[in-house]
Picture 1 (cartoon, rainbow, N blue to C red):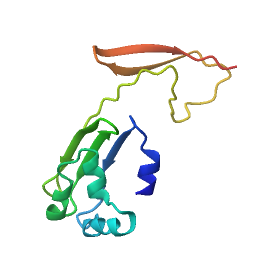
Picture 2: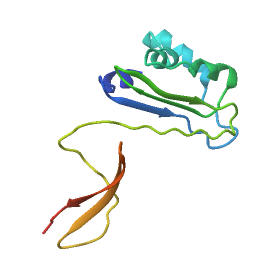
Picture 3: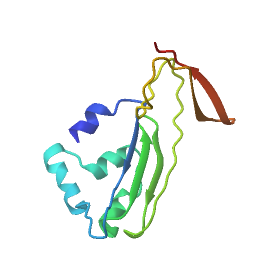
Amino acid sequence: MNFIDNELKDKFYINVFTILKTPQSKLNIEDWGKDSLIYGKNLFSYFEALGAKQIRNLTKLGSVPYIFQAENGKGLINEIIGASIYDITESNIIINRNLQLGKLNSQTIGLSNNWGDLKFNYIENQGFQEKLIKYLWN
């Protein structure tokens, strides 16, 4: 909890989802409420403050797929909860930012003494576009 409070700044996005590897996987939801005894809040109250409406249904449904997406300061973007552990949940999120610099991480592409053009695709509100980024390394 302390970690979320310290890292989730205003206008930051949060994307939380459960991973259930087997039908026996457990989220230990019955223990989540106990965090309020230590921290004064718990996962339920924390996500509800960000706009969650369905998270407490996990206490009835048990360990099922759950997705929560929000922007701090604006609120809920998506919240999806499965009816059973076998449900498949999906969600998309568009993160709008006007930035002058950024960072793109990738696996190592290979060895080269000189890189020419690196092309990549991105989605823009008007549709699918292709941009050309020129990188020159010597």
